Length: 118
Image (cartoon, rainbow, N blue to C red):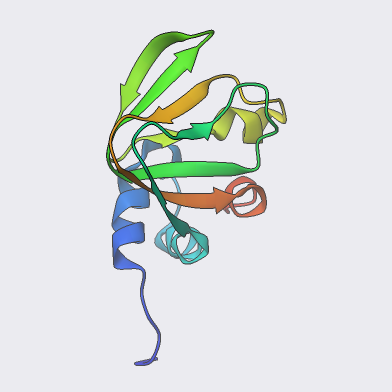
């Protein structure tokens, strides 16, 4: 359909991510259509340890610092994802994720993330 919009940026980002590597193209496109673009300011918490997990975040641009008990354990950027542990294991968030630069994310809610067909 010529009127249909294709989420090209989201598809390209998700396709590069290892967690979605086994998914066929239609499944990736379905995820991309469900992705919500979110802009986060530098210094803002994206995820807080102990909270219930409701979304997976794909980092489109920016830098995210992962902390456990106040100690930095990773720096993530474009093409990385955060939040999958709480969704896959149905446990509270295991770490804090803090934007260390203005950051653009694509968020997938629990249902879209967990039931993505393989």
